[in-house]
Image 1 (cartoon, rainbow, N blue to C red):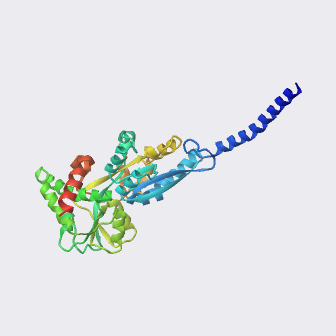
Image 2: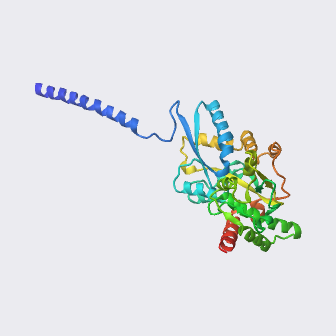
Image 3: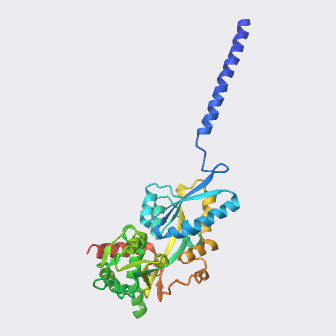
Length: 355
């Protein structure tokens, strides 16, 4: 009988001695296991990774992102830090497709967003889910020339003059370069349409061929092309009005030439939904909505992008050019779903680049 009691007492002691370290081990293991989502502990900083096409850098890093982080801190008592990366639009799209964990993307062209949709990284209803169909700002395409305009460049056809050396970003990696091709090609469609009632595609093709013969360098992005032009290389550069005005503001010895007809580039911003956890979603949704706020739209105007929510905001920037015959990719080319295969691939790659 005593042996039985001693056995029971021993079993209870053994159980207690086993349970204490087991509970401790489970507690430590729980502390090490990853938590669901990415919700920070009190005092920690929320981190957002944003990838943008090259000329967005100044407006985002100097104005829009600091203003949002201050607003979020004031309203939620949480610190937010943005990790940003800027390059050609197709380049950042390829990086995201290859696995870069960007939460937000701002692209030069809608086609890049569609590539992400096709791979399941962005929701297919992104246009209806965002204000202004996801377009966050816009800017026309213009020509930069040297001070005094020594080559006498007044419009796109002058870029085809003998002896003109043109810097043009690479359409294979730069959204800005693709906008530029549509601006040059489309300018002749728009002018011929205004003159005769019908767009003249042969006239547009001949101009693009003639201009492309004078291209001496094709950097990887619009910003790289600007940097190369700033070093004194080339006579002219086709670029965003936004970047041209920034370059003028920096004191560069350049002038901006406004073509008679040119395209207004429109730039989409989206959540890279596959890279967004449930805990991150409220912050990222608030940031996306902020991009169309009056505060953010006016910040874009300050850095020479044109607002899309209120045309009156654009009146504040007296340097914005007046374009006689502006056009959009939707108006002249029926959107990027046609502009890319018909013009970038069908005209530039197959009839201009390969010649």
